[in-house]
Length: 114
Image 1: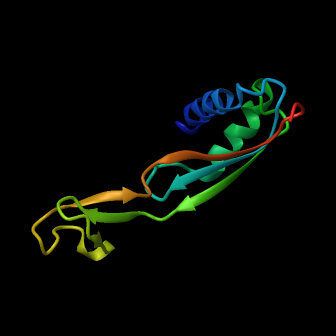
Image 2: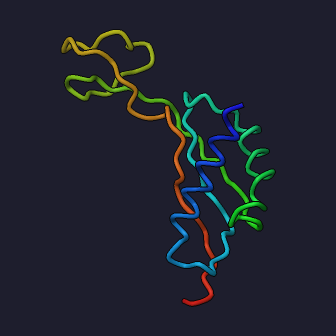
């Protein structure tokens, strides 16, 4: 279950992002999950809930935003539909342009010193 290692890396990134405000409370974590990222959303949410109290996110909730997979031509950058994945009219090959990764999109923090 690699969702646990993804959540641990996510917490590391959250803590680096919140470091300038050491007394901040993380309220919400927005994570973008690509269609082809190989992540099971329920397992990611469960891992987050299980480990959040051990880190700076004890009161935080997680919101997953799903990103559809999209391809472009590696040569000319033209968008390619799912059915055209073999070759572009220019001769270039398809490459996955988005929808293959997991990203920390945004944090909602309560910062007492501001």
